[in-house]
Image (cartoon, rainbow, N blue to C red; front, side, top):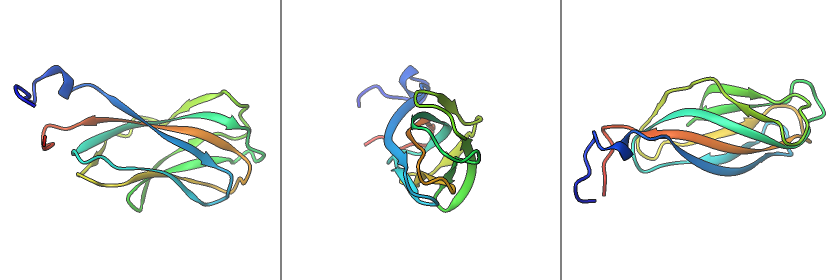
Length: 124
């Protein structure tokens, strides 16, 4: 894009990606996300769509195959909104981010990844 540079205001904004609904099966990976530009994963947000049945209901957050955080949902009712702590996880181009359910087989939530492109990103 002509005139694009790393001090341009659009380079510094946080972006979001609605990854879909996660949950419904224990210890299953959901909501895979990749971006072609190098980025920082800032936070992961969830909105409960189906209440969990186990107090320990949660989603682990993965960067490739490494766990980098979690979202504890417990038995929160539908509509409850939760956010991870600030992750600031550096993502190389095309790295994968996802969530993996813990033991609960009933609880579900919409997952939103909040990220920011980094100055070493390549613009095509």
